[in-house]
Length: 67
Image (cartoon, rainbow, N blue to C red; front, top):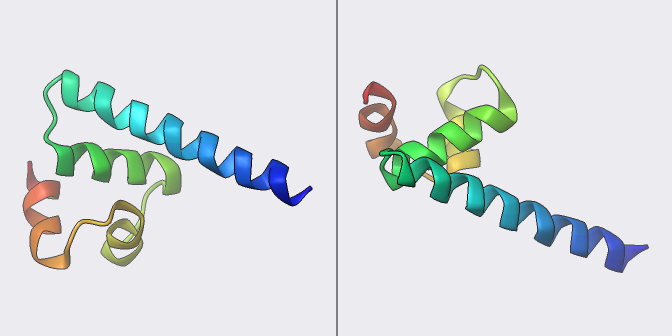
């Protein structure tokens, strides 16, 4: 059962990475793609969860969101 969960998590990471690459191919920056992907996953949110999910630093998140 544990191996199945690990494989599922790895598969999700691959899908998210592919999604972000598609977003970058249509013109988003890497930061914008990460934030878009995070918001797609968590929905409407305050800044803290967006930072946690996207990995974008607090000092850059507002610039990314403004774009």
